[in-house]
Structures are given as structure tokens and as C-alpha cells.
Length: 116
Image 1: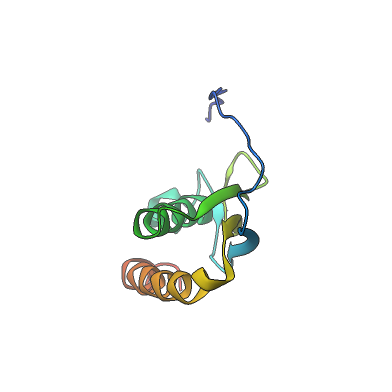
Image 2 (image 1 turned 90 degrees about the horizontal axis):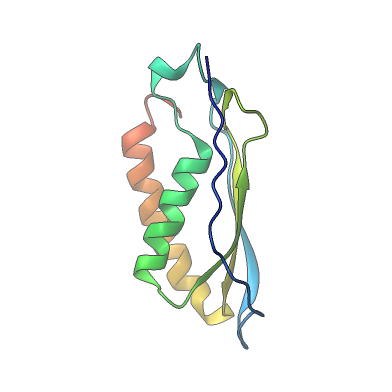
């Protein structure tokens, strides 16, 4: 069986800082699966992996802002897709791409055999 939880966080909002533009980031192509029947296979969870990648990116580039994070459309499924919107400057793009390429390689080493 499963369970539900409601989490309420005191999150504020503010206008996007001057010079920052929204950029989309997505993680797609994972196998996903049923959270009960396939959980023992340790498949990648697109929400967890993208949150991890964004967290590592924000540590490397603290001025980048997370504007949105979404994914998973069923309570009983391992998400196979997720997306984020980041606020950054066009000058940040080369550094963001380099950082994300390193994170992608780490994830491929960790999940490549389980969830290519």
C-alpha cells in the first residue's frame, strides 16, 4: 500500500532579478515504472535525479535561481520525466552547460546499467 503526505513550506516569491532570464531544463527517457512492482530494481526517479542535479548546480553557481520544478503525474509511479525552470544570465550558459555535463556523467555512471 501507499500513503499520502501534505507538506506546507513557508516559501515566498519575488520578481526575477534584473538580468536573469528563465531557461528550461528537463530530464527525460528514464524507464519509470510502478512504485510497488518495480521499486526493487532501483530505477532512476526523474524528480529525485533532477532535484539532485539542480542542487549540485546551485552549489556550483549560487547566483542561479530555481524558479520551478515539476514532474511525475501519478502517485504510484516512478517518474520517468521531470523539468525545471532556472533563472540565469546568458553569460551563465557555458558554465551551466559544463556543470550539468559533469553531473550527467556522474548520473550515467550511477544509473547507466539500471536505467540507460
